[in-house]
Image (tube, rainbow, N blue to C red; front, side, top):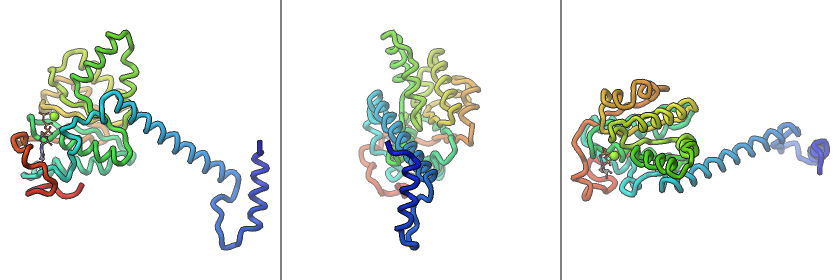
Length: 258
Ligand SMILES: Nc1ncnc2c1ncn2[C@@H]1O[C@H](COP(=O)(O)OP(=O)(O)OP(=O)(O)O)[C@@H](O)[C@H]1O
Ligand SMILES: [Mg+2]
């Protein structure tokens, strides 16, 4: 095996042949070793992320984003009021500023068909394209998986690990079962663990602020506000009636950008 001393003297010998105008990338063995370590770290982080993405896909389908929402983007989100424009801007800036040292969460609350999943999927698709891992899971689906673990005599801990390891976890249909006690415990655990690890959570719900506080508890809502969490009220009519003929990008009133 070649020793580090050997590498050092080889570097010294090489320097004699390098023209003065050429700046070597490393001037010492220490610099070269530090570069190798940093490259190794980057590579193993990348592999971790790839594994995480593969695991989420295996468990919940393509990052849990349902077929209806796979093509959702900021570009095909139609804006027809200042409030919708604000929701769109907040979602887009959330995606663009994701990571960057922060771990702000978001809550999209409002009536059915108002585009909560659309904008959450736009965030998810944007982040997936940027190489992040994302998982969208409905609470009923999550509770089903938890029960499957119990039925098969497994602990739910590896499921919880998967939920806690992705870069962004979106919990959908929160409160649809009006917060059974088992559901409350799981949501509490997931949010607690993620935010302690400085990883954000997205919440999509038909419940309003007061109802969410009652259903999830003030403790959870308080945690979601950490690091300037975003709260958007989707306070307009359902879009579902228009879905079949207004999906084209760039149609009248379409929001600009990606
Ligand atoms: N502003 C919009 N522009 C374009 N498409 C929209 C808009 N709002 C909603 N949609 C589309 O309408 C359908 C329903 O929206 P979405 O699934 O996001 O509703 P939701 O708020 O999550 O409703 P629910 O509370 O019932 O789950 C989706 O196909 C979505 O892409
Ligand atoms: Mg929805």
